[in-house]
Image (spheres, rainbow, N blue to C red):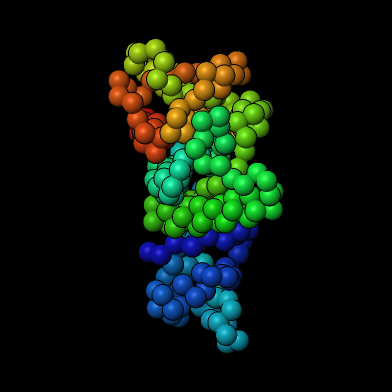
Length: 268
């Protein structure tokens, strides 16, 4: 069943109003009409099964859908994972966004690190801002498409670009756990112990239904890896270094590898 996202659905609602680009997609791409069923997610743990009941006559600017059923969405992980990704060159970020959304990431932060190859035009803040804005729009569009495909309950946000300094400050202030895959980390036994400890923290946190989910930050370096200074500062803010194996992974592979491990051990 085709999936769409809206804000502010309520259990008391009888209908859901769909607007924007989704209207054209429903009518002209999917060729759906009155009586056809769709799934609408409100960005939480609920899916609303709906039947198209009304198509606006003034240029089809909105669709009204009757709520037929409300189901629990079990596609979200029991912890919120933030991927702090060192900005890669080319279109690698598009692959990272698409696949990490499929694997359950909560949000992705593009981070400008010491060894980031991509350089925005610092001589013109307007040009740099426009280039960043254009890329973020593209990444968030990819996130939405991947969310629909993988039946996510939310659309993970691709946040604004951050400097490494700001990213570490954000992580220190908002993350319960910070993980730092690093080639100089100790062996796999220590890494498995870290994963087990994270799972224990999630289990203990989720015993209390009133508590918010555990938040996990993962830092992945760009093509050139982390500088020594960055590695030291991450350790200073409490990031736990871990290994992803005896092979050196590309930047677009490392995030997918750790997300695959975490999604596997976290899912019920």
